[in-house]
Length: 230
Length: 230
DNA sequence: TAGCTTAGTGTGACACTGACATTAACTGGC
DNA sequence: GCCAGTTAATGTCAGTGTCACACTAAGCTA
Image (cartoon, rainbow over all chains, first blue to last red; front, side):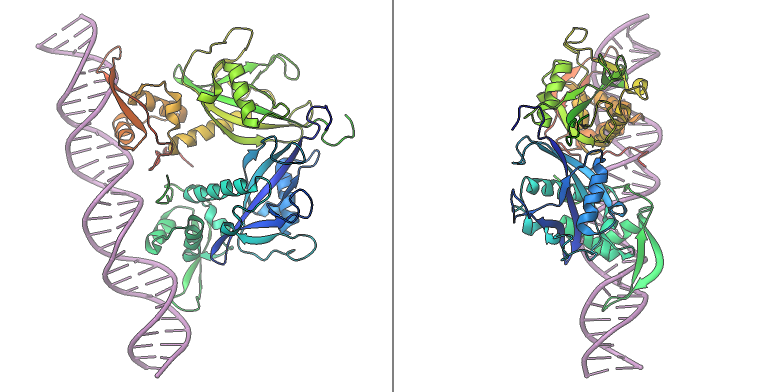
């Protein structure tokens, strides 16, 4: 440690990438290869380069971890974590981003390019390196609130989806059952939330469901509130 | 400029301190004494010290600029601005905070300790140094949305206030007239928003108004939505 | 006491919500 | 082909909140 001021100050981005998969809310986690916390699970992320914009760094890291074009996904800065001793290597100020993805295969999963994998949020909570447990918790709470007020839920879905798919997203992210009839009415009657494609999808059994795509609206007016908001 | 990576990287905090004064929404602005932008208005703020927590730095700067105990006010981190060339002195990543105050006299105003002064938001918009116009805009929009969903409006008021005072806060921050009758009923019927003190305040003319203080609730359920939310 | 001003309550039309019934469309078993 | 099972979508209806407005209450001044 030198006496030079801010000698070890660095800016990092940490990504909370969420999806709904296998009936649970899952987050992208990596296994750390280097010290500190080698071998332990952590959120994907990395240092911001000199002369690199912070959001550009988040998009770049997202691309490196998932192999997907980060620019096409929902990506939102949501908090800064800058407690002086949160990283044993020195002063690291981390800008946290929330990203939402549909349940797509990870192009680079298993390759040497990335060791990122999906894990249920409930399974990793409490086991992450650094202060990443707290970052994850704040991201999940942010996503939950975003579902109330914005059309974010469509970002969890593929390009075409049914009202049932969308309802499942709400139910899994909120951990709360919703009435299918009332939910359907609310979504369809909210201007700009979803647009019918005119096509249908056959389920393994039962009546075919109409397919929709995301509409132009980004905010929901009126909001869709969950019951247990304290 | 050396070749050492991040040689000039620094973390700053910028404060958007809002109050309702003289019938308008006003923000605390300083006049810069040093280059760059000497003589130009800017948001109060400063660099985070080595080993200082970011929020602690925001509280400290708020105390230095207003002479008030920053810890007793509403103070919320709301965004990070880290575009590489936003500050001509080098790479400065700024964490922006929103603070809300009642209309109190600034203890140090006019003294040499501070040159901070209140200015109407509409008057300073477009004239601030750095990227502070954008920071101010985002803060105001944040405050507007916070009024919809939280009890933040009480933070603009003194310890005791009337329903009319509270309504005035909404009207000025939103720039939109509200029906006094319906507003009153909504506020009083929302559990935990306000608590009656049992006392009254005499206006210069007209019927005395009951005084209230802020209640225990922080979120509003149901929210109070403005009409023009896009 | 009349008249002004501001505070607060009452009312009725209307929209939205939540709980639940009913109908629609498809598959597979017999 | 017909019925049972399953899932999707629409309908109903009471309760609640919202909005626009009328009205009453309580102080002041003239």
